[in-house]
Length: 98
Image (tube, rainbow, N blue to C red; front, side, top):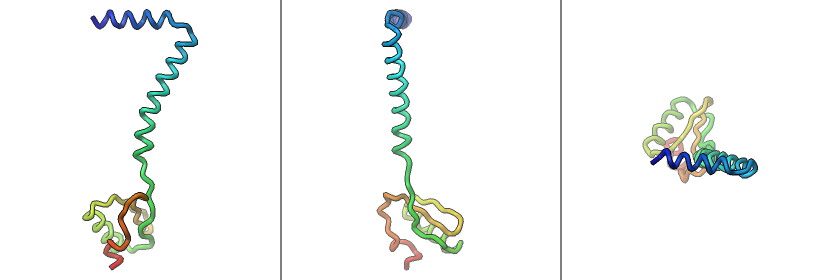
């Protein structure tokens, strides 16, 4: 059975003119690119600085608290703590603000 279907598809493809084959090929490639690109772009997070210029102990305390609160974060050298731009988390909730 599957070989009959493959033969029918190949026969259909052979009967198409070059222009239609090109349109179908580029449409398929475009659909695959979009199917891969959209989820990748949607998963990119932008981060804003929550704190900068922290000592290593202050940074560790804040990172620990963010972890307890299940807040996504990144750190950079120079005592910088970043959180996602769309995060509803506020600075007043961190230990350094107390």
